[in-house]
Amino acid sequence: MKDQIQKIILPLLLVGAAVVVLVWQHDEKAVYHCHQGYVFGTYYNIRYSSTKDLEQLVLKTMQDFDNSMSTFNKASTISRINTNQSDTTDLFFEQMYAVAQEISQLSDGAFDITVAPLVNAWGFGFRNKEKVTPQLIDSLRSIVGYRTISIHNHHLVKTNPSTMIDASAIAKGQACDVVAQVLSDNGCKNVLVDIGGEVVCRGVNDKGEPWRVGITKPQDDPDGSKQELQEIISTTGLNMATSGNYRQFYYDGDVRRSHTIDPRTGYPAESDILSATIATTSCMRADALATACMVLGSDSALALINRLPDTECYLICATQEDSLIIKKTTDFFAHVEKKE
Ligand code: ADP
Ligand code: MG
Image (cartoon, rainbow, N blue to C red; front, side):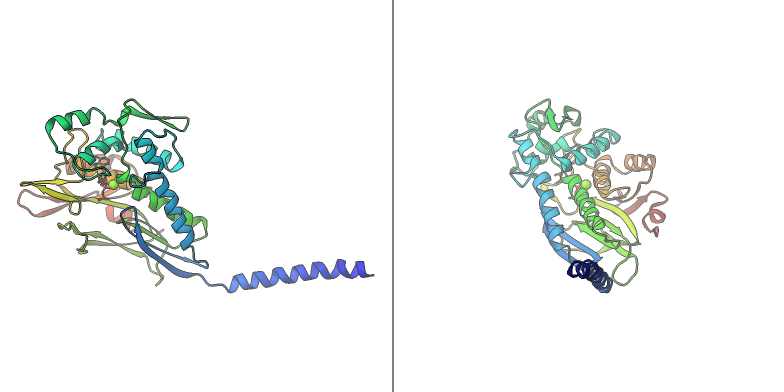
């Protein structure tokens, strides 16, 4: 008799408990969360709607990413590869490498992650600035070249052991993709991830409207305090990155040196583009292409972007008369303002 009661009562209790859990879950409302702070030497602004606060998960994801890709973190995968302490790659590194090499080929070497020694020499990198002479640039150019590295079985192979890698022109975009993916894996449909101006967004904002994303006006702004916008884009689905030479630059006498280096000459790029904004299939790709465009200059950049499927650009260029001119792909606004 006692056994029979147990057989009937126990399942009933379990069903009851399941119903309580379901009702409770149903009652839980998704709300918008916003996390802001500093990472990878820049700001982040992350917003999403969810029943759960995912801040710890977001922070852990960014820390894991930093442990792989930051050249300022001495124990990271990339730093250990740069100092030849290790040649072992990891997933973030391999994803970055694959896209970086593709964009290097597409841009004929204008984009090149092995540019690190030149970036350092010009004072924009993870090592101290050197006294730049034509001889120094020539000798550094001999250890730069995307074709001199390869990955075999999760190991990076360098033709020259002095070669170093700088993923700064692609990693912020990649980090946006990674954080957005983690949020999406956790059921978030409405997401905005902005890391230092590279942006991924999906769905709608807390007013139920498309997210609004700005393209900054390229004005000299070394401390990042000017926020005047050139355009505001209203969108429910976008992967967009901007590179510019209006924040990271210095004057060397009368010559303006900006942080985009032309790996083919060894000198800071002297391009007519003040800022290059790219929208494409991933933010990592957009980030790398934006830097490639800065090096190429507007005519070659537009020709490159026009050849690529699902890729649009908005280039703000300087004219000889010191005014601004916009060169963009025909479908830029149709693409970025699409409602998914
Ligand atoms: P931002 O910081 O404005 O988003 P980028 O995405 O263009 O700029 O990244 C610029 C950084 O990328 C530089 O500071 C340097 O570390 C690195 N870099 C410079 N020139 C190149 C290049 N030709 N190819 C790849 N990386 C570059
Ligand atoms: Mg970039």
